[in-house]
Image (cartoon, rainbow, N blue to C red; front, side, top):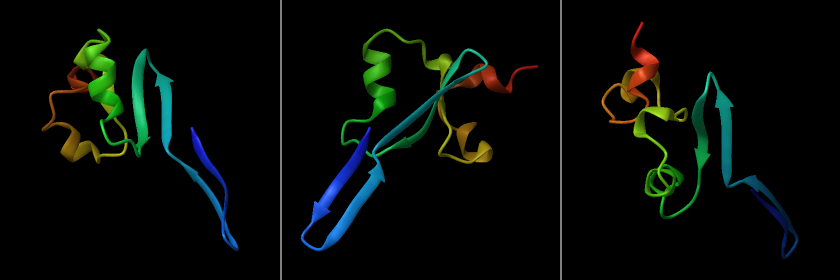
Length: 73
């Protein structure tokens, strides 16, 4: 999802939401929504361990309750 258009003389173009599917996980790379895509996915029945907050550093991701399976070997 993108913002595309003009605001007066200024060009507007930007990504609001960017999601990838990698290794059977949903990687949220950008979430510019108010409610949060991860929350919407969880409410729709997607398991928390299948959602990875790609916009957070790997160090910070381990403190969330999302994408835990990513760290198990």
